[in-house]
Length: 293
Image (cartoon, rainbow, N blue to C red; front, top):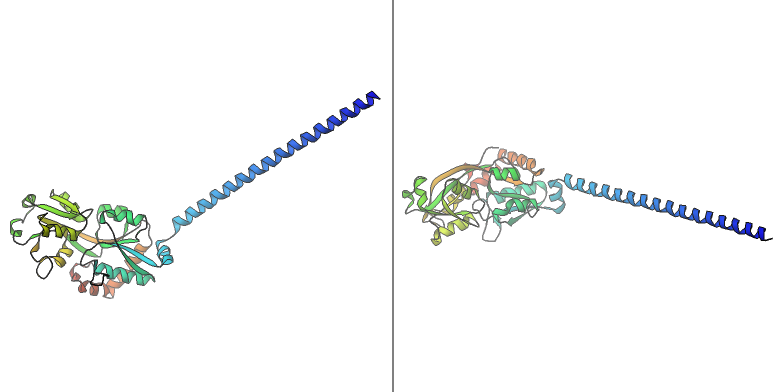
């Protein structure tokens, strides 16, 4: 009897151990399945992120502005290219052309006044969609933006009091003067390249104000602006243009890889061909500077 009882107990222990072993194996299998599921979920998440990045990379600027319904243009106060009229509306050759381009794309135009020194940053963080403000096509600009074809010629010119202009007819004589220039502009580059003594200010208009205030002797600004803002019949009738420091060309800047560049070049060609571009230029007195498209 005792032998039978011992055998029964032994059999029970074997069955119990087998059951425990089965449970452990099942738990292990379940853990493996869960781990596989987690790996699959992680892979799916990575794939989704990659797809989102790819979609972001391939989104066009045209799609972007069409979706939001506006072309945001970065400008400064720069007559005759971009400036405010008596109603506080942006006008000028560049402003009018930008508005016409936006209309051709089926969107509204919006102008935002920017710090010219930060134009590339403003463009890349999408605060603006383009820089359209009599922008000289310098090496810095063309390496940091995708730019349109040149549409206007220009020069960097010395502006100073008409009373003393005849005393400063060459570069050597300019060393006696203190200059105001717009920070980050082609005027600042021209002043630096020619070894002039200059102070950067926030705008070209501000550079003219420095002369009027007597804090600077002269300024280096765009010829197109000088022709519109200094001399007889202007707010600075006692100032005049002097030595030309460098000749240059204007273009419009977009983000690198933007599909709006080719569209603008086509728009320029069409508007030049049908006379619209020269008609707008004549309104602001710059028709002689327009480059054939």
